[in-house]
Amino acid sequence: MKARFLHSNINVIDLDRSVKFYEKALGLKESHRKNGKNFTLIYMADGVTGYELELTCLHDRTEPYDLGDNESHIAFEADDFDAAHKLHEELGCICFENHDMGIYFIEDPDGYWLEVIPPRK
Image 1 (tube, helix red, strand yellow):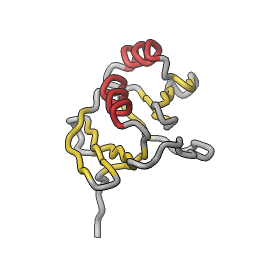
Image 2 (image 1 turned 45 degrees about the horizontal axis):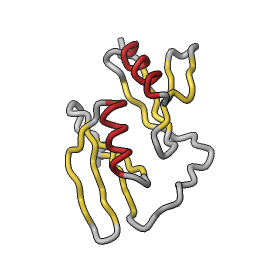
Image 3 (image 1 turned 180 degrees about the vertical axis):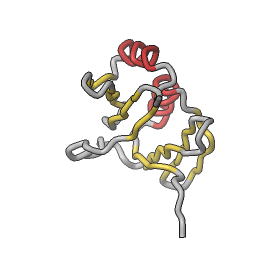
């Protein structure tokens, strides 16, 4: 048996705000959506890998989610690391930089951390 990655899920409060953030900050695009009676799922894709980020909005949820210690994250490789860093500075979403490792993290509108790394050599 062999499994393969399909998607990761995060819950969001405001779908429009989250979609706009992921489009602007990381260049992701909506690939498809599912609408249920009490929820909407929007799948965001990079157009390269086939891996998707599922944004789940529960329609009756109004309170922010408790993210605990926020130690989990999703990593993205930026093809132009310097341009990405500049954009993220302008967006004001950089929440932590690790200069020793040459990486940084941005925070989405719901408080999730996203790691940005330079291209692998």
